[in-house]
Length: 235
Image (cartoon, rainbow, N blue to C red; front, side):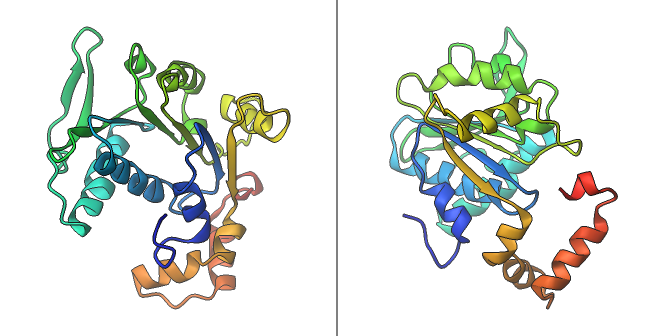
């Protein structure tokens, strides 16, 4: 179990869920990736020779996952890990010219491989997979299709995303969510957290703690709504 005093309830629920297929329909900037990175590190510390794949929307985000999130958890727990500086990308598939940021945990031999959106990277691979911000990608369908077979021998896939601004119900991610809400043939675990849900569970207080602000929940929501140029962006 996670530390209930540290994470917010929707983060705890997501982190503690071991279902083979997990889908997170979320608002932006509510700490979903932060919570997921904690789970990635915990799995690498508890399992031997385990591989956690992380697919981000671009190379910069892939690097930040290592530098900003994984490195922070390692420092907090005083864990020795190689590659947490994120300074050098490693070639993991010379034939396809695929590079990634790799963090290795010497105590267990496990690793986190964080790469940008390259669906072909998953061909012939196994392990757990995190697909972050899927709805914001041009190759979302290919990323999902190539990653799914990785879990056939007992792995887990976590598909996390806010919606693109147009909010199209025809995107691969939107269809996955709709499927999970209906017949749910994959028996996926569906998590949902809007900005209102996050605020009701303590997001504003966490932001105030980190930034030194003293906003009320009402002030934060008013400011957030005012930042959105259109109703579609807000929704």
